[in-house]
Structures are given as C-alpha cells and as structure tokens.
Image 1 (cartoon, helix red, strand yellow):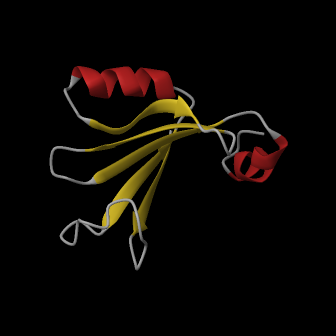
Image 2 (cartoon, one colour; image 1 turned 180 degrees about the horizontal axis):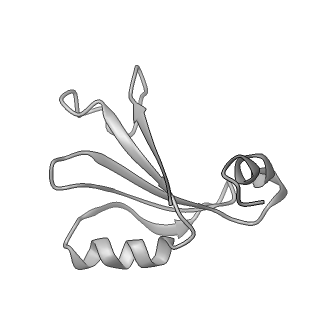
Length: 92
C-alpha cells in the first residue's frame, strides 16, 4: 500500500470544514475492498461509500478516522489513463 499525506491549502469541497485538521491521508491499495470491510467493521462512518467512479478509472471510498482526519482510499483501475501513475507507483 502506498500512503500520501496532503496538506489542504485553499481547496474547496472535501474537508473544508476542518480548520483544525488541514491535512488528509490518501491510501493507494489493490486491496480496497478488504480495507473497506475492515473499516466498516471498526464502525467508521463512510463519507463516500466504496464505488467505481463514473468519470475516472478509480475505485474509491472516503471516511474520517476517530480523530477526525480525512482518509481517502483509492485503487487505480486498469485503464490507459492510469498508466503514468501506475508506473510511478511501480505497478506497471
């Protein structure tokens, strides 16, 4: 699993209500379904349920951890638009 930490600077939309938590964690994983089930079993409320995007080749879900940090889980689906990111992640 690859993990990225991002600092929110002037980003509108997700997590904009969290001034005290201006970062989020992005997890890139092939085991996205297992992570989703695991976090559901820990009673974390999902902000966005696990689903394939209708616009980009990604399977993803979003939640917050118990401290209120934004957690995004993604799986890049096989598609030529993902070739560069998959290569950079060492998966192609």
